[in-house]
Image (cartoon, rainbow over the protein chains, first blue to last red):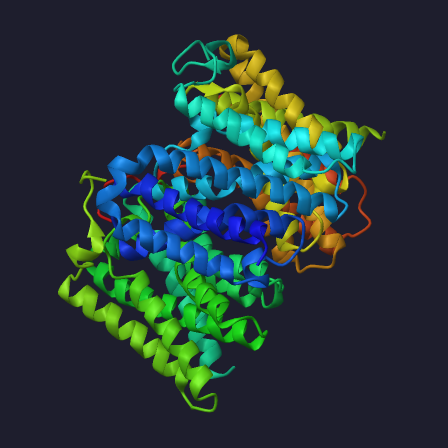
Length: 207
Length: 207
Length: 207
């Protein structure tokens, strides 16, 4: 077990935890929690694998399944602690999404897909699971909020693809891309930043 | 035409009927009914087939398409009868979902996927179509309710996989798994059972 | 660049524009607009390609990606003009959906799938992107409205498949099918037509 592998399993469990916590406020039984947690952790990567025509990652290595299920059940049983840890979960969720997005760029490029596709698969893998969870739970999706969530993932994926293009042998480029995403996201959480108004149409405006 | 084949076609039509009935209360035109009925009947199995990389079942045998379309149009034209038959449809829907889930476990195991994947594909096939229908119709999905719906399917799929593992030659194991799912589900419908509170986070609680 | 290719790129951009305009009223930042516009333009064809097991069209030719992104960003930056052009966008959206549906029937038939599958892929490609957009944006999907939107696409696809069956060498059959769809849709928009009541269950009726 390499450190990266341990980190990926932790990222999977953390995404499942954040998936359950995001929805628990609406009321949820244990089976619903299991389903929504697993969808959050595994959904984005599954869509990516279908699009790039490889076997879904959790079929190739079912440890991902168990990590997601364990995270979801842990989150359900820890329900009472959520309020005090909500902040920590936001940061961990940012780390999980960053790891997944960067791994997706890597995987897509290594299969010789165009660079634009690699960026798209990175973003889709980072946010896809959360989108499916929100749709199944009847919550507004993050696309309809002004959260700084998709933007750092997009920037990190573009940066990584650019580096791979310009300096293919640069070491640690994936780790740096994860750091870029987590850094911007953490800064946005810490400062309660939202997208600036000139990049936003307010609801009910002239359009 | 084997009895199983006839049963599968009936199951497809019944799922389409229950799909239309579930949504008709919100107002629906005939094309919407056709679309939502077919999605309910065919959606779960389609996602399963994409994930396990086989041709979608209704492409291999387009009788499934016609059975789903016929069920949807029948349900639309029988709209006025719904109130009196709503209970019957709940039971039939349970049977349809059970047949589809068990067939999915069989199909996934026969393609030599891991057992955990077979259970997941069983549950996904049993509930996937209904989830897509609810999302497209703007209804709360069954994951957000305390209905005893996913649980019997999960139990039936786990039971079947365990039997196949421990006693591969046991006859009728699929039929018994269907009976287990339908039995629990019918009992829950009959007694208006919901998931127990200790397995549920109520909305608005401390989490 | 053939005229058809230019038309397809325009159709892609127009679907992205109509996707952003449909949602902008609810408030949307630039990244959300980019995502929802691209999903509207590319979502239906992606599901079609997954089901018929070919590489997604925007991976084969990434110009589709750029056309969708350009349309989405254009629509976001033109927000203020929407009210005056809303009508024009409805017509253009009808044209885009018609082009996509007819191209999907062509593609599916050319891969020797059954004719019923070709019709289904045509309809799915024409409306799939809009459905995903509405679900992600929390809007009621077009399946729940009485709009004459799916019906002309269904009629056009059935007509095209019938022609291909009866008179395989008939020239311009695809162009005629596009004209049929656009004609009915434009007539419905112009006259504010809805599905007739006898083909509709009103909400809250006896079912």
